[in-house]
Image (cartoon, rainbow, N blue to C red; front, side, top):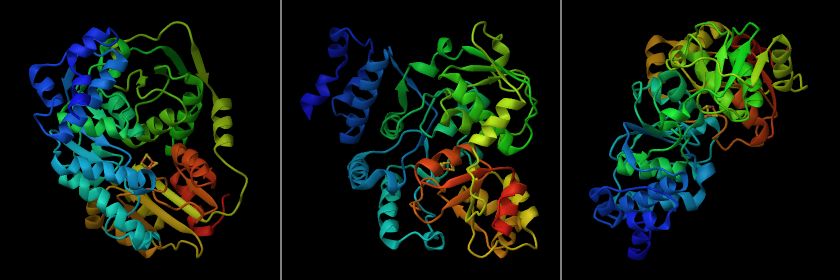
Length: 420
Ligand code: F3S
């Protein structure tokens, strides 16, 4: 162990001539074990990352969002790793969790086995022991983990990273689960990538020449843009001022389909005013591109057996809209409707009476989880959703056919069992 720690000492890195990372005395001491095993392991991860990406120093962060929480993804190896960290590890900054594989209190209503629940609870307990706030949501910015403009953060949920960078103007690379945990344990991250001014500039121009209105339109736009972007940072022109809900759906889609975790929209996002449209690569998104996106995101099956809303997790406004539509209606027998949201958002919706309306209609409000991270492969054949990101994972992970449309269209499918 000692040997491994010294292997990553700053002098080693300087001598190696690859990275330039210089640690402070305190950081070096943590690397050498002064803060315990979990802190030393975490520092080792940060130093290795910094070395790979040419960071010169570690910088303080204000918050962390950890993805990879579902036992479905972690398995026993992941659980063992977390248990080891939890023995003496404590997070140093505000840290929240991404969705887990089940509703942490009411997993049976979502058809999750007690066997899976036991493992999932151990995962979340390990995080709780480290001082992590165990609200499991991909929209931490809606429930109190809300960084300020210019804050450095270390988040690992791709849609949340994209929202934080683009809409809030905070600065995060797209962390992996282990590097996010490491950053939380140390309260710092290596200064590279999107933490640096020079890497936040737009590198191609997008001209939107079509109407983008509903939530699913924003998802389809993200699909078209993500596919065309080759990982470059877009400077987007021609879009109207819009809601947080549309922007969270858009960002989730852009990053899922190959875009960068940062976009600038002229007149809408906070850093756009610092730049002009870059010369060179320019992409037009016309009615044609949107039609192609919708076609690509809709399969042929006419019967729908699963309607999944809240990807990224639904806001209170979205839940109000869903309840407004469902009032007095019934979800068809044989169709399952999930509305995924954060537990605190559900609490507000409960106060407002929205949850009762959704449940009276036969819908299920799924907190702490979602259709992608829950172990539901094989249960449903055809999913309807407002989210282009959900389409991607439902196809790839759950082997579903999919349909995308606005809330009304999806909820009509929940009531009729048909996609019209
Ligand atoms: Fe969130 Fe699950 Fe979608 S984590 S962004 S609801 S795939």
